[in-house]
Image (cartoon, rainbow, N blue to C red; front, side, top):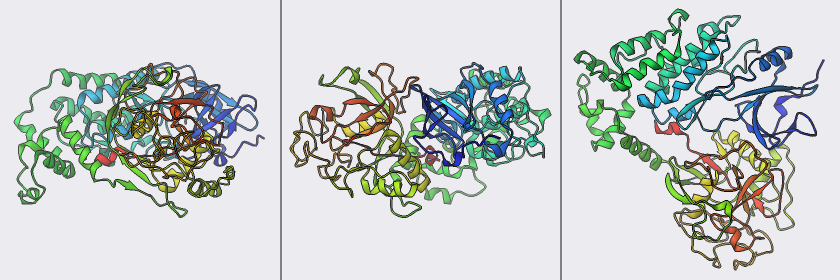
Length: 580
């Protein structure tokens, strides 16, 4: 009998698989330790570990092989599983983009029809194709779909069919079909069609609709759809298998007919439309703010009188932006979140959405800093005011039994932590996320450079040449130049309230290294690649000449390496669903 490794002991940076050519665990891809993003041979993969308590290993391997080789743009590819006496795991491609749950947070009252069709069109085609082969996804929910350039892509196709039971750990219980509630679960393509209709309704009406009964909780009409189309969708959304659509492409076809030939809402629909909107009081209140009407006016409306006509209109894109802006502005400018185990997370500064030019604008750098390109940061984020210190990292290391990094005799405390690899930094952000119940990670290159520039287009945020009191580097004019790190915050902060963006220690970021900005993302995201042998380091250090500390300087390092002039800072995500 095989003695498989205890997956509860897995940690970031661990080697799994073959010793001479291992997969290196990068970060968790699930709430538990079963799924990880791992680096292997210069590429990133999602690996899902076999759990002996969930089923037979033979079923795991047979099921994994069954779903290898399926090719469709809406399905992440699956590869042959790995099997040894110690390790058993399946393997699939990494999908960039945004989780659908997060994406729908931007549309609390439902997305525009063209957005919904763009999201689900290719998924409908992919599911119909695999269903014809008697294959199916099986745990389709908002967490099993990534949004890439407005198109939905399914992850983990068929990954859990080997299990005796699919549970709430694998599937959002709000999308459990009735056949999953039985003692012996019945799993067929019809289960996917049930989940697809639930997801479609979440896209059309807002994610919160999943908390309601689809038979009685749906509105009587929809503002974007004709009565006949809405009636079809409501029927297809019923729980009984006989009501589910036989073709998901047909569902999208019905939606598209309304997109190109919208019918006028009849008088008898108007009440349904008002009913549909009136139960969303929060959104109506925000719309009033945008329209310039005071909230106090709401309380003066008689209960049986509908609000003014403007509240029944679908918000424009600009109105939606204004709503999100107001909620973002209401968030604290500075946070220092408590940890479950005591103490506090790094102090973080709120950074607003913006656009800026990224790259070397003064012909001072290398080819990897060009072409200069405009980048959009559509959603705000928090970034740590200071580089992560020894005090902060040592607390994590002691709590997790991790090796304490050396300080080179310079002291610990509020000096930036050094001698940590990219994997160490990732492990810290994962622990921080667990301790705060928030999402922390390393900055993207885009977030880092924008934060360093602080709305400047010069080489440094304060000008094109270094000045004493602003940076710690070799010949920057500080007492620590070329000697050691300085305590964090020893130099002036930039206009965004951030310290040591130029010098002190160079900082790990999330992205894979690329030789130039050709093909770089134009919106804020982690830039991955098939060949990801190196990660990016930004900002220069106490050891480096001033040129290396410019806002646009970027260089590569293997993620397992450590140095006395490398450290990191963290980003805390502002969840999209705060825009509700």
